[in-house]
Each structure stands twice: as C-alpha cells, then as structure tokens.
Length: 155
Image (spheres, helix red, strand yellow):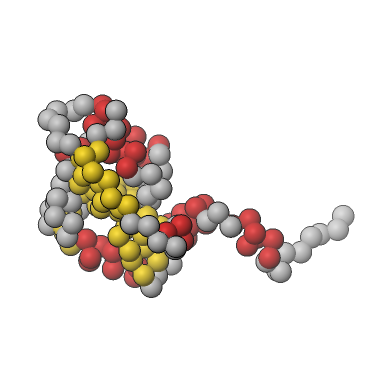
C-alpha cells in the first residue's frame, strides 16, 4: 500500500534532463528537519551545475510505529534519487536504501536545503557525482560511440 497523502510532480520539458535527483526529509520545505521513517514530506530536486529545480513534493499520511508499508511508500517516492538528506535513518532502512541506489546522508536538524543544494553544485565534478551521472545518462552509449580518441590495436 502506498501511503501518499499528496504527491505533487512539477513537469517541464527538461524534467528528464536531471540525471541528479536529491531528496530532503523536511516538514517546511526549507530545512532538513525530519527522521526518514517519520517524515511527513519529501522534497525532491533536480540538480545541474547551473540550475536547481524542485521536481516533486510528496506528503505522507502520518502513521505511528515501524510499519513496513510506511517505509515502502517512502522508499518508492525516492525513485531515481542519488541521495536522501535527513536528520536520521535506521540502520536496516539505510541498507534498504543502498539496495535501491539511494545514499542516505544524516545532517544536523535545521540544515538549510538551499545550502545543501549549493554544496552539491560546488562539488559537481567530484568523482562520485561523475560516476552517478554516467550510470544514469540514457545517452551514454551514444556518447561513447562519438568519442574519437579510441584506437583499436591490430594483432
């Protein structure tokens, strides 16, 4: 059961251009201030070196306890994300997130989402981001074919 209360997706012509998607556990859409398992809201941004766009906001029904359906809905909402910034995440959920390709990052409560997005852009050329972008680029094989520096050895 997906426990979305509301799921807003911002669609534009360039929506698919964002190979880097990042999620934030936030109740106010300005600060990371929630534990992943109990967050009432996830904000997902598309990030490029020169641009950041809000792509999705998902509001969840508040359910007490550790319900597996509750976690499954939150994990499903992270589809296509590289990272999730939150105040805390349990160890077993951390491993579940890694299995679907999402890296959970714990930050202090009230950390500014705008500041984190700026840091991501400033570190755009970091090797881990470059590897992620190459994996998610649907045109990566076309780029490889266009490279001219490849040479084949003759035996």
